[in-house]
Length: 328
Image (cartoon, rainbow, N blue to C red; front, side):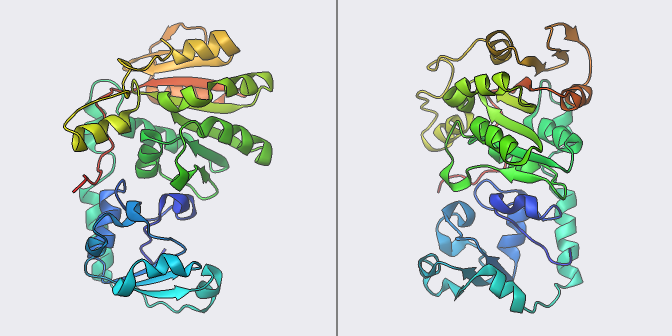
C-alpha cells in the first residue's frame, strides 16, 4: 500500500488499490504516474507496444527503468533504454530492497486521482446508459468471491478502466490474445474449475462468435450472470476507423452485420434463460414486463438470483473508450 502500482490488465485483480492501468487504453492517472515517474521497476511484464505506446522512447520519458523479466529477448528489444534483470519475479522480490516514495510524489498522485476520475460526475447526467457508470455500479455490487470474465473490445477496456477491484476477486480475459467470443466459454470454464460466482461482461459482437454456448449455460443451469453491452456492432473497431481511417466504416456496424433484433429475447425464447434489459430509464424482468426501477436495483436483482441470468444493456454506438491513445 506504500508503493504506487500501475498494473497491466492481467494484474489488475492483484492490486485493488493501484493507481490504475496504463498504456494505450489505460487510465489518465495510471499514465500520468508512469510518464512522470523518475524510477520504474517493471516486474514480469514484457512491456509490449500497448503498454508503452510508440515510439518506445516516449515511454516513461523521465524514468530510470529496471525491467525484471524471465525472457532475455523481451529485455533486449529496449536496448540501452532499460536496465534488464533476466530472472524469475519471485526470486527478485525475495531479495529486493525498495525505499519508500516521497510524500510529495504520493500527494501528486492523490491530486491526479481527484482531478481525473475515470467515471466523471457528468456521466451520470447523460441520457441513456453510460458504459462507465454501468461498470462502476456493477463493480460496487459484485462480491469479493466473484470471478469476472470479459470479452475483447470495449467490454475489456471499460472494465479495466472503471472496475473497482476487491480483494479476492479474479479477472479472467485472454489479454494479449484478445479473441472475440472468448468470454462466454471462459465463464463456463471458470464455473466448472472453481464453482465460484461468475459474472461475464461481453459485447454483442463477441457473443455472436460463441452464442451456441448459451445452450451449455441453459442445459446445465449454470448460475452465470451475463451482462451484454449492446452498442450495435464492433464499436472499438469503429473508433479506430474514425480516428485512423477518416471515418471509413466497413463491416463494423449493424448496417453491415446481421445481429439478432434482441439478444435478450434470443436468450429467453431460444434457451429459456431468464433475461432482461437495461435501456435508459425502463427496465424489464424476465417476463418482459416493464419495471420502473433504478439501474442499481436491477443489478441487485440479477446478482441475487440463484440461476443463470442474461441482461442486455443498451449502449449508444457513439460511446468510445476514453481515454485512448490516438495513432501518431
